[in-house]
Figure (cartoon, rainbow, N blue to C red):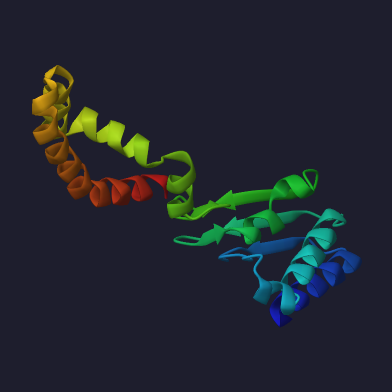
Length: 167
């Protein structure tokens, strides 16, 4: 909480002095949980936003090499809060976004998408799906568990690849 308060105060002071502001952003953000509320981190994060909205000199936000800007921290320094004065620059190896990669996969690439991808890319799953579609009722009882077992075997690997892609 102290660093968020100090940052908000420094931004306000720099603005009063008429100085441009350079923010080296490498933050994982505010969780919005009870601890953050109890320690007033969210309050001071809001102060940072308020001071950036009122900033009348150029503000440059830079995410350095291998840096990360995630969650509430992304919202705090998003250039759209003061588009006339703020610009954001990002190194090609930096990462950023409101959600962590696992959260993106959880929301945008759910399990049924992973299963569809398996059916498209894994020849064993594709063959089992084909057999299942053309099977008689008594054959389905033996094919379905094989398909389910193969999907369960591949699911952790496909999830990991999806997270890497989302990052």
